[in-house]
Image (cartoon, rainbow, N blue to C red):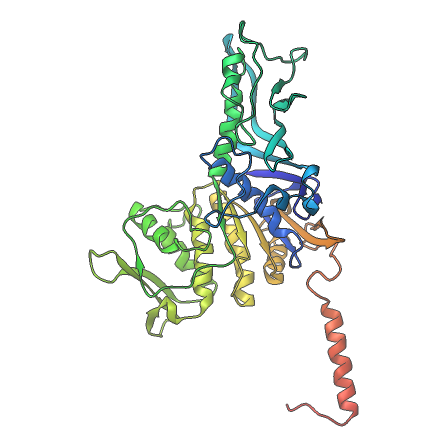
Length: 458
């Protein structure tokens, strides 16, 4: 699980400070306040880690990527590329990492179950990105490499005069180190030039494993179809528009995956979990994916709105069903312990279903250990989270909620202080509009109309 992030000079963020992330992290606020940018930072790192180009410092994407950010100048604050970009990322490891002393195989040099990564990226004046410095914090030590005065050369740290640990050169290998791999990796020469630097590759691998388990669902999801083609694909996720949701449901059915719902309760398939939640949210009564012709590769999604209504295709019911379908599926389809990034999961849902969506997220986080980081405009979703904290259905420490706003062109982040009873103790002005002001204005208007002799039609 990602436990914290921070970033400087990224898009509209001058300095976020350290942002605590929890099993459920919600980013709320007005449009264009910087909420989505924080998700884009993680998506940029994910597609960088998955890129085959080892020399590309950051993969800023294209129209086929998870996110398309343009050029380095486009992603830095006020487009001032000379300011550079800095970020920090901390996460818990799935398994404890032990670093063995290469000279004494029975001796453990360092061990720990968490990592922190930092990087400073600059432009070299020709539009090309370069790594000025990268480092990993592990077991109360910091290991990294930084650019030397000769811009094409790098040096490892801690240096040879560090008292607690030092990298030892292999005799006869005095050469300088080249640039890092992407923005987070040590070049192959590190292992060739140093006797005891092989463990640095473990940090690079841990970084890549983290982003392998990050999944994304965007705000603009596909329209439902009258029929779907499935040829046995086993998708890793729903696709950024949820276009692979039927593939995922059929793949999970074929794999006969079962999900625990707690002691003494029958296990559900992914499909059964989705149907159960659709019913709990009072969106439909039944849902099924079935082949048009037995043995064929064409499928239809059929639903029944109520117990007594006729069965129809998903295209013939409310649009909200097809929009929430990828949200429900991704929560129970991705591997346990994954991190899911979502934009506006509540889109096209009525208020009651938006509130119920909070229960879906809590259930997935608690039953499957997934981490959910979302940006939302839904007051109903937020208030249900507050209620569940008050009811002790989720601990306040397991929810991190933030309000994003913008002042003078710079984004600002306010952590919402929730007490044990779910109350927000620092509610920002105008967070979801002023309900009291709206009611006062309605009362004033009614009194003015009544004074003119107008009466309610009722």
